[in-house]
Image (tube, rainbow, N blue to C red):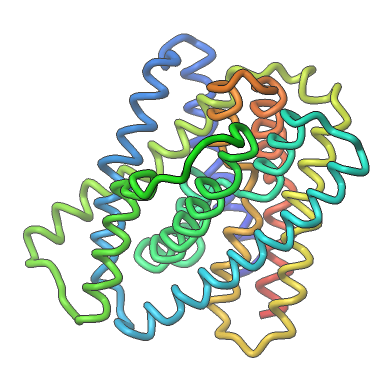
Length: 307
């Protein structure tokens, strides 16, 4: 993909983010509406998108690529977590700052940014497949580790993983392995509903940015550290490592897209829930999301050349 085409796709994504931001600033989308749209994406349109992706070609080969991508992402997140733990000790961060720092720096926004971005670059079906991998890796790290940083006494529950997206991802994998397809009317229905995912997800991301003032994003040094690691250093190192491995090109590109995404928003939700550095978390998500307008074209154009 040429740089001009990549920049065009990024601009389209930011236009859709801008709609959500503008609507929220004008009061058209209120906080309750933002939560409703977020739930609509995660519980309805995104599961339909995942199920619609069962028509992707490749079958078992696609599942193998998914498993390899999942392993790469989990390994990447674990290494990044180790680096962030060392930095948090060096900076003597408070428990709340440490939880926010690790949650926002290690885990990217696989749902609201990752899937639309991967779909724009790799195509709807294949992009959704890699987006599903990103969601699985994100959920595993978030619910087994990040949540415990905010509430160490919390117990891990299997129910936390029984989300519509995880269930539909499992169904998608089984259907790909078995070579099964939905009947044409069902496939058309799933595709029609799933096509709403990208614009809705990006508008939700834009509405989330509306609560942060521009000047506030420039004042805290820790925000620059989060953005620098999440949007530049970590994905850049991963891209260079992937270049050295004998892996399929599309797999490398799919993993690179997910790694280059800004901070995931669930950390900000959790920080507000437990009243631990909620403002810092929201600002980290906002600043890193705005910065990808610069970082993603550079990183993914490099990835496209290297792969």
